[in-house]
Image 1 (spheres, rainbow, N blue to C red):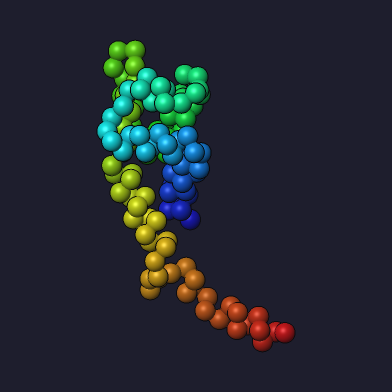
Image 2: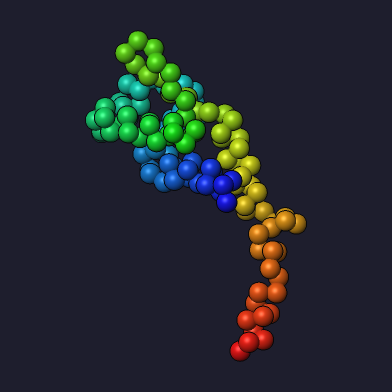
Length: 111
């Protein structure tokens, strides 16, 4: 269960269209907060909230330089999230659905 919780934070953060767009922007490389802000009609504090959520889930890294913060994608988190998504969307021997193969048979027998 913990493995699922770790990765669902990333998907939850991406559940907002503006945050998904920010991740898309960062796929081209590091950007200053001011450059991200130019693309959206939002306040600095709203952008800070979005960036905080993206950083907390590990998807984005931020670094301070002077009065600005520069953001970039965290390659390790992206790689792990891709692998997690592959793991939960492809058939495999240890699939969660194979844990109790008699479930539906037992239900049918009780009817």
